[in-house]
Amino acid sequence: MMRNKLALLVLFGIISLSLGYRMRITPHWHEYGQYSSSIGALQCHVNTSHIASFPGINACNPVCYELTSLKNGRKWKVFAIDQSGGAHDVSRHAYWAMAGVNQDGGQLEVEVRDLPSSSCNDYWDGGITGYNPNLYFSCPSGSYSRNRAKLFDYKDIQCKIGTGKPCTVQAGSSYVKCPSMGGGGGGGSGDCTPNKWKCTGNAITQCGADGKWITVSKCANKCNENG
Image (cartoon, rainbow, N blue to C red; front, side, top):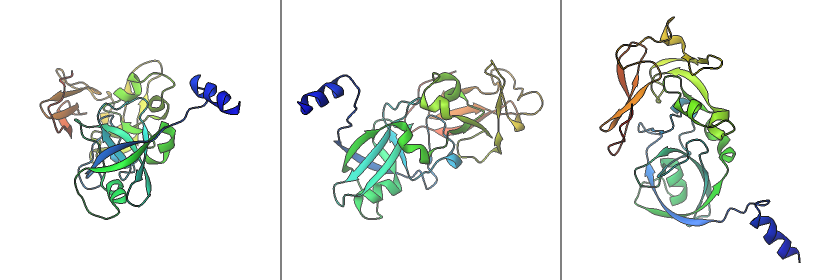
């Protein structure tokens, strides 16, 4: 009788059971100069040892994956805040933990369990660049990324260009003001206006405060053209 009741609760979504499955992962050097995040998460606001670069990620409600090593039983969580071209890449430290040795290798099979975004709260505090606030404005109210997104004054996701101070959003608008944008809110010339980005070839560029395009990220494959 109890088993039947449990089955009904699961069927109607009152209880959610996350079943494990197998996946082959490969290492990516997020911690060693090759950091990337397709959703715009700032490197200085992320624990780079816990990143997943997977195909088809959900930017507004990114999945937190719990990996379990088939070699030593060790568990390691990774946050899907970067989209890959098809590979299931994880941070180098995550791969090492699963491999049981501090050494890169080829595809490594692990046990995987999908967890809610909040299970990876410790690995990204919501920091994104105020020069590309698309995540903040495009994700629906109530979504994980919209609720946690905080805008900071960096022109690149590696946190190398900018003051690092908080940016502000004008109430009731999509106008973002960051300290380095100057009194006019960034200005810009031609089609280069603050908060605008575009993808050309294998590079994602962002309009800077000086009205010039700067490269903020590189794509492994040719990316979709955006204006």
